Image (tube, rainbow, N blue to C red; front, side, top):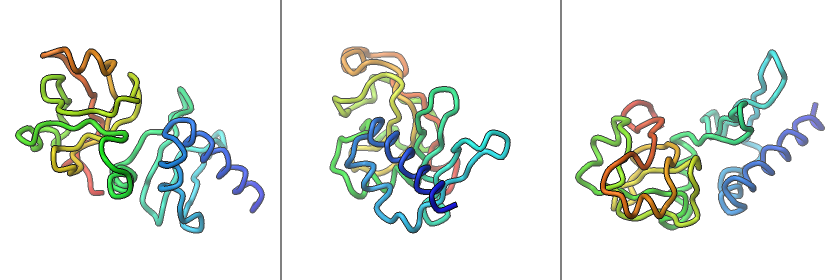
Length: 163
């Protein structure tokens, strides 16, 4: 059982390293004794990763990548300087984004230049306050030049769930 847990942990950390980078992986997995990996009952494949009983990552079965949770987003915000993994929006629209509304190109103030379409992103306001999590929809150059259109499909705003 111990060997299977270590194998699962190594696999999870490898995916995280590839998707987010080693610095993010080190933040999410800094306390290995508090990490719990939950597997699917039907397939025995990894589904959820918890840190101290808080969901931090969900493995998407369709592509093998992780989705962030609000808890993991707050862990990243507290430990990595802006704009890493972030889309920064105007303070005026914070309430709309917290409710789970999508982010439009015209509201983006700054963005991590290393992001690509379909990457997991953390949406914050100009004060680096967590608003939502979602997936980037367009390339960075388009987001910066467009005055209309959706930049981020928001999956969950902070008002829709507890952190």
